[in-house]
Image 1 (cartoon, rainbow, N blue to C red):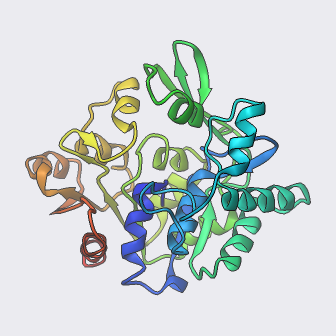
Image 2: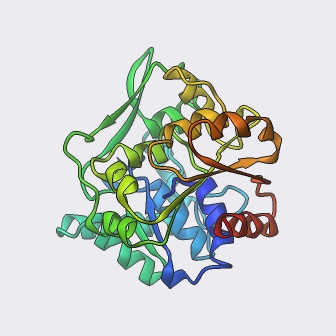
Length: 300
């Protein structure tokens, strides 16, 4: 189960140890947004581009050596706050075209993966409309507007999962949970990445009922995220910013929690939740770090 950059980095290590054909990745789509008439799926694209080996490693998103001439032209005519590369636009154009023809997001994602030569199953969490919104002093805004356009500077007053009442998990996503041997909760934002997936009806029940072992990697180290606004979001809904808080959010279904060595002092507190705790380095500075973290998860 994955969000964007943090999950993609971990998955890159995991694919060095696991045959891609045996891997299914359920990806957050609460960040999906329509801009200039195009359906953009940020987390799906980050995971797909990373596993396809074409991601811009410096940014962690987008396509390596992409150009931005279309974006530059758009900015002369309209407000264009979301960065869209020229090659990246091809993905959005293709996705939007197929969605308008009646294909589901799952079917479109499968086509994109085949085009890029991926063997792993990249699965949207739902094929239904779903939108994560952040409640701020200026009102409720789309998560990407909060994150990108406004640079996460607004005080977070609440989180809204618009669509959670009616959205259902895609059939392939829910089936993959029940059919798996191991479910890994990647080190992604626990509120607007993993939390969004868990907000889809039926996902938590599947995680509780599957016979697979469930392991989560902490995205919080020493009271802060490696990247992104998870700390602001957690504080905004009244949560302590800690690995313990993340473990507690997953405690109704989780078997094992991978805790960073810098947070070893939290081990006993998390174990009181009834969760097995394994302490290991979770900071992925190099490919070898990613592989070792994946190895620690698989050996659990």
